[in-house]
Length: 186
Length: 186
Image (cartoon, rainbow over all chains, first blue to last red; front, side):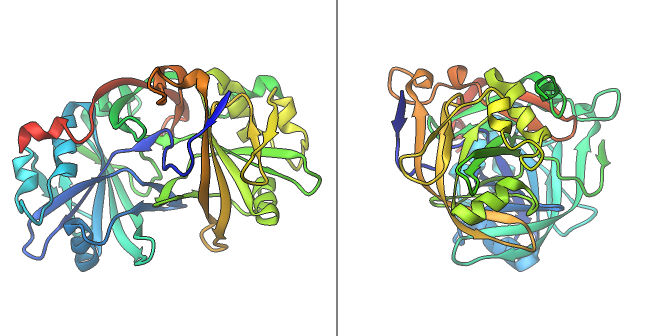
């Protein structure tokens, strides 16, 4: 029987995006974000509260990166969501993370996170706090690519946020092929 | 070493949302959607092309549901993404799925998918095809709840779309606690 839970922002899977930008002194800052996804053909959309240091940095620099949090760097990624860059300006370094500037946008790539979307700010809506960015490049470390040059999820080990239980889960085993498993029903 | 892939809408995890609405005759239709997530405090946002029958139905009825696709119903959920409701008006039934009207909005809940967001249409943007809906209720079947009444992912078995490889993966094991694993770094 179905149980009604009322108004909840629970859905599966929910991402753990590590959103990074430079501050006014060129210091990299980053936060984690669970609300968002692909927005349209070449854009991502993420809800970021306007009081975050990262949000302010993005609005100033007009650029950001979105890296996939991984099981291997779980504690560091969680730390980025616990500590504010306002209180701890070197939080990225304190998390044990290092950065390299994107070749495509004025934003930092976190070296330890193997997959990153490099984005230009398109819009930020003050009412909803929803930010839209254009994906300029996706960079992926070759250590998480398979022999065909595609992402191997068993190597990348991206995590997902369980918003009902406040847990992180790793993406698990392959269970089917998109656009073909349903063909048997046609 | 990082490899640049250019403009790609690849990110992890990406959802497999089953979006359902009634047509003008009260017949339930549904499609699957991978682009979207939580939009803001009580809203979801999903990119839905305007030529989909489901999109047209939602714009007419101003209501929809979003169910989490599951490993147990993978073939049916994939089928909803392969076949158009314009060509196959009874596609939901042909997928072997049954529906019950939401108690909260004028939209169908798919009985075989245990977790559903019941939503009112807030806006649809003709340029981006991005749809925003207000979550009015989340209903979850008690067969996928644990002893504390919370979602048990090992029972729900929601799937995620690997947009790089066109595979579906089930959400895997718990790897940590949000807001606490990073405390060791503080």
